[in-house]
Length: 301
Ligand SMILES: *[C@@H]1O[C@H](CO)[C@@H](O)[C@H](O)[C@H]1NC(C)=O
Ligand SMILES: *[C@@H]1O[C@H](CO)[C@@H](O)[C@H](O)[C@H]1NC(C)=O
Ligand SMILES: *[C@@H]1O[C@H](CO)[C@@H](O)[C@H](O)[C@H]1NC(C)=O
Image (cartoon, rainbow, N blue to C red; front, top):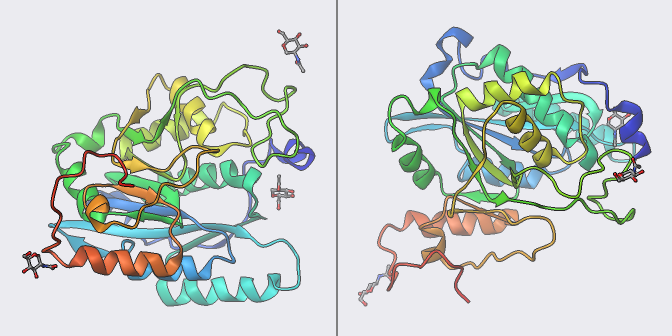
């Protein structure tokens, strides 16, 4: 936290890895229907590989164009740090899907990651119609996401749209040893403004731009998803809940049943280890899944 407070006014860091043509010419970037922006710590190589092979594959799907980018900082200077940096370099050359900035990739720096990404987005891919922002251990049912977003109509990307697992009246954690600790000196309210859990959020290009503008006047805050909520509020916009996005808040245990019939109806579900992503992906490719009843939207036992 002390570290956070020392640095929380710094919003610009040198960029080490880039993919400036990810969306083609910026002025033509509206060709990108969905940009998957996945927060990934440098060491999470297996997660990135699994995402690339499954839901994060870049392709044209149902006539729309999907692009993928991983957002990363730098590893702490530990023994493996140098090799991990080399690894990211290699990945960037192989797949052209890594943005890396020179800040330590830690939990309290996730807000910085979001803000730097939004800055990159405005410069390099301002036309992207929709943006998925999420973790590298979620499973995205990309087919459902595309169907859902296509359902927003032609003007959908130019209107406000921000959905995820909504938290209302969430109190900040005051235990100094918690990962989510927020000291009173930094935030003295009893609850956060409404926000969607950062594991998986879907927003329109319009909303991403509005958040970016609002963020210019809001100091960084250690909890990245709550920060996005603050930006929305400043922009006069509201986050919304989507039943199909199951990235539970901070204390709840993962309810990640492995029943493919459950996932068939979801958009985003969290906590998958890499091999599970592959297995679930294969399951969902088998079109004739024998799902006896339509799931009620509740996780099965
Ligand atoms: C965020 O990154 C900066 C730059 O590397 C680092 O000095 C700082 O300690 C990091 N902050 C936290 C809270 O880890
Ligand atoms: C937080 O607010 C309370 C009540 O308004 C006040 O008494 C207290 O001094 C504040 N604490 C800090 C650290 O600002
Ligand atoms: C689905 O059920 C039918 C009849 O019970 C069975 O013949 C078929 O093999 C099943 N398909 C799969 C993919 O399990």
